[in-house]
Structure formats: C-alpha cells, structure tokens
Image (cartoon, rainbow, N blue to C red; front, side, top):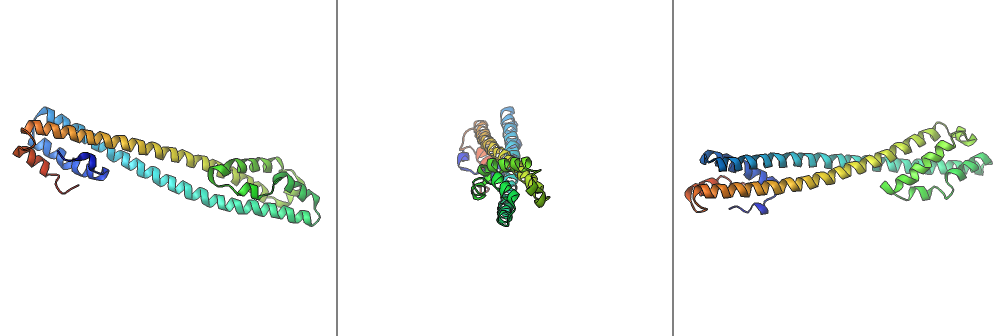
Length: 218
C-alpha cells in the first residue's frame, strides 16, 4: 500500500487520477467500483477546496495591501490637518486652535501610532468628531478637505472590518482543505484495500499492475 499519509495535497491529486482509472479498468467488482467512486468524489472535493483557498488567500493579500496603503495616506492627512489647525492657531485664529483641541485633545500622534485593526477605533472616533464639528467656523476654512477626510476615515474602517472577514474566510478555507485532504487520503486507502482484496493480496500480479500506474508520479 502506498504511503498516502506522506503525500502532499498536489501529489495526492496526481496519484488519485490514474489509480482510480486503473481500478475501474482492472476490477469490475462493485466493491472496487464503489471505492473508486468515493475516491473520485474526494479528489474533486479537495481540488475545489484548494481552489477556494487560493482565492481566499489572494483576496486577503489584496485587502491587506489596499488597507495598508489607505492607512498610510490617512496618517499623512490626519497629521496635515492637525498641523494646519495648529499653524492657524499660532497665526492668531482662536477658532482654529479650538477645533484642534476638539479633534486632537492628546495630539495627532496618539491617533496615528497604531496600525491595522487597532487603529480602527481611533479613526472611527476621529471621523465622529469631524462630523460633530462640520459646522465649526474653522472647519469651513478647510472644506472640503474636512468632509473628505471624515468620509475616507469611515471607508477605511469599513475596509479593515472587511479584511478581517476575508481573513476568517481564509482560516475557514484552510480548515476545510485539511478536512478534504484527510477524506481523500482515507478514500485512497479504502480503494487500496478493496483492490488488494480483489486482486488476492499486495503481492498478487494484478495488484502490482494496479499500483504501478502511480509509480513516479508523487
């Protein structure tokens, strides 16, 4: 019996196809044919799961890259807004200083020091503060940048949550792939035992002929 437990997923799929075909060709037994069908179903299931896992991995990579790029842009814009309000306050515009204190009571560095999911609560709070101060006199001086920053902060927070969803999907896909791999290994072992019994043992010529179809593939 081949060591199916040692084979990688691609190798399992590679040996499954000729072994299933040879079992059907060499053994008309209903038991062998049923085992061959079960192995084929398991192979199809693993192939589909691998495709789904690759798709989930690609989506996660794309979502992570997009979220990181957007976060870096937002960090720059948040810092620019804080510095602009501070500069206007230094120039003698008390309304700018007041807005700065409302938006950045602890300074803008406290908002931009985190990354990823940990950053989302801070940016969601800033977006809320930007909405609450939309009618502030100093905000009018910075429109439409003030409004655009709020909208982009909210969009980024939603994107981070979406990335987490994709990450969970990826973890689920990995779990499903592991289960499908175990199913195919078990199905091939069952097919192997059925062929062995029908052929008359692992040393029988017909069993050897069947097993040789997968030699050198894995």
